Length: 402
Image (cartoon, rainbow, N blue to C red; front, top):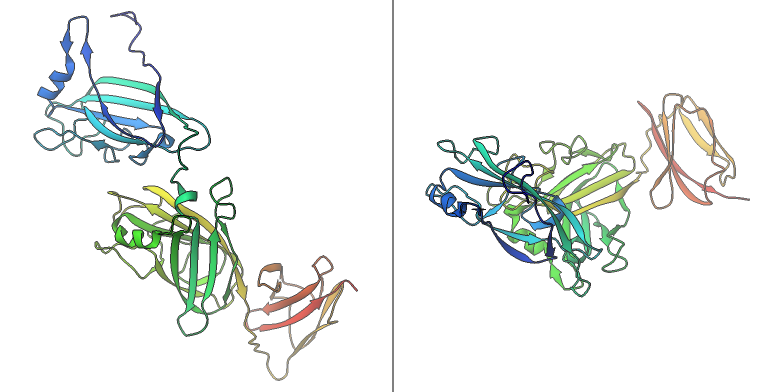
């Protein structure tokens, strides 16, 4: 504003419309000496490159926050120098979609001069800086625009189907949007799995409002998509661990791969633990166009889906008491205190787990004595499991208020 002097370049705020594809062109001038700096950059494009940094919430495309922090992160350059390296005088952008008011953030532009140093690996730390400016950008909400094609509108139903590989009825869990487009997202049903059982899990993703088969789209673009998984407790004996959301190299039993031999995740294999407890299973679908590789992680790309299911254990009826051992519970029905009547059975080193009628774990006691108080449980049928180093026993009891 003051010409050559202590105050540098001052950037006007910029307002952009939501859900609009833009081509950004950059013009640089020295208006005092009537110099067209843009023309000079074009002439020396093998020495110049623009780098971009932006608040993640501003743009749907490109993903991420720009390539200032990481030179290989996606920016949609339209222009290249003679060596086919990006310049940045022209770039493409698509603003985010919002139904909840304006979205504001910052947009940083850095022009680097890299004579003799510009290469595919040269990042923002290479060469001199000709320009470094930040703009305030607001994505303006349009109340008359159609609903955003975000996670809630694009995907309103996800179905998990656990099919026992040894035969038997499949177990289905559905996550759906109870209110349609609006504030409530996908709500997942609880899933009841039998302990010590091998399953194949298949995932179906749909937009039932617009009759879109998102599963088919994922298969068509499998080189851009990957499901990541995380789980708690000792739900599964295979895969081991707790999933690959926190560490992409951790084991998951993927059955399907893309054309590059990289995992997708529409089909996976699982084996529940012999001493299974209830817990959660988190499934996230990442969209990684241009970034999916054997080193990509959960942090790469956009998130199309992120849902957590409650997994409940269905306890088998197998007991392993010896002929000289006895273990029963009384009274049954019971109101307050449940007693264990034993012969040649030591409960002190065991764990007692109580499940409700839908398989949800409601109580866990370690190293118990021969009496437990269950007065706080709601009336109904319960399954009780006792397990120790050489002990496995289960039964049922009825809780009553009478």
